[in-house]
Image (cartoon, rainbow, N blue to C red; front, side, top):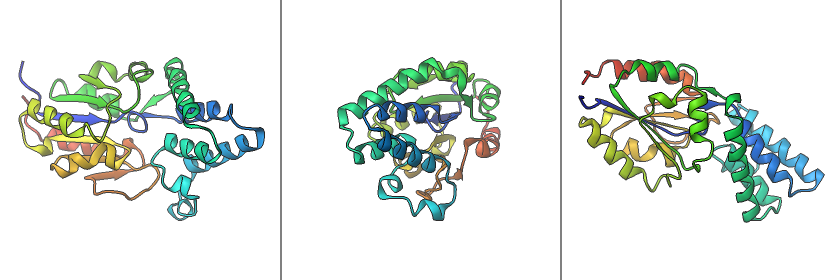
Length: 239
């Protein structure tokens, strides 16, 4: 069998599926450690972080939210500011991942992604690499129809520290120029910066309008960039 000519490296949370169920679950478990008033405040702030789209209004957020790159970080920062100790935050996070595994059916794939991966027909090496633990990852990938098209799932990935090694392996597997590797994620430093530095293409799911980095493409949702990924892949010769 011929080697693939393109590599796609995806992050997981905030990238390949849509829906905030994991964030709400994490917040719910965090709130078990807070009194009613503090819990109400945290939930309100979380919703504001997830739902506000205006860059100007986001710049008025408290620093605990301005420094967050995704919902998990936002909730964790709010919880720490409210006095929830680190062990309790960690336990709440792992309980949210158990909830994710049980409720994978409630999530949807990024629009157009299953069709894109199905159409690649062996031309691409597809990897999902996430810092999240294994719990819930395969369950979600299977539920949203991506698992049959994914060649490798890496959990507890320790990005960005592990990114050079992951990129090296993928570039060796496709044995082609760096721009035939496309990294897709929602955090610039962890998911994309190393790939961009090597000349790979990058698609930044910048849901919260951070403006960080210099990706090849930037969009609020992956769905808005699927066409550009397809255009690039379609001009690469097959194996």
